[in-house]
Image 1 (cartoon, rainbow, N blue to C red):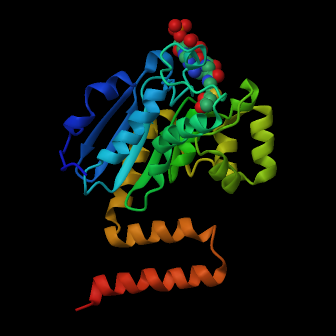
Image 2: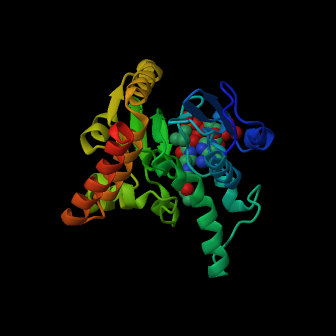
Length: 265
Ligand code: CAA
């Protein structure tokens, strides 16, 4: 991991990330990643997803919260559609070599999977459109704060594809299989009120209050004991997979660690 570099992204992550439509800053324990191609509604290229993975690998030690946001009118319009015509889509795997395509997609998914790491809490600040890969990026985060102009849409099936950037699992976990099927196979848009009702956004605020709401949430997250935050995130993410017995054992294990840290000699 790179050294902490308050207020700036580590050097290693500079120019290439800008080209990939990404900007990031680190301020103490908070890293902010901005999807930064507003003129393309933050449409994402393969380089964007590789860049996100690189940010995950370069996060300075001591970062506890990562905020993802979008510049301009939208969070993200999903994949840059020019990727399908081959423009700028270097390394595009067309499926004819199954193993190569599997490796290609796995590499892109790495841009999303690090957001579940237990040592950080990830917050998506979502406004405007969050389509396809953009919706999946919000789903990859632990907590979604949405503006009241949010428009979530899982567009992939309408384009003949499946959502493959880690979004199907959180979507089903959040809304259930029936609603997930309905949303994906109609590719319809979910607006703020419904997003809050379905649990796709934990917090919904007026558009001009989004930054303040995220700041307030981040301050609350940082107020919690860091070790307890890590252990609790690990525990909660395990809960869905574990039996009650396994989860009880996991609680005992994590609490033993907490007690040792707090009171052990
Ligand atoms: N790829 C490339 N360019 C895009 C884009 C995208 N996904 N989305 C928007 N843009 C471009 C537009 O072409 C336009 O460019 P010009 O100014 O040169 O004409 C510019 O961004 C602004 O877009 P609009 O004028 O359309 O802006 P809007 O506010 O009226 O509409 C929008 C915004 C609803 C997002 C609309 O642009 C749109 O529908 N975009 C396409 C969304 C889409 O289908 N994304 C793919 C999702 S599937 C996916 O993501 C698959 C995956 O991960 C594997």
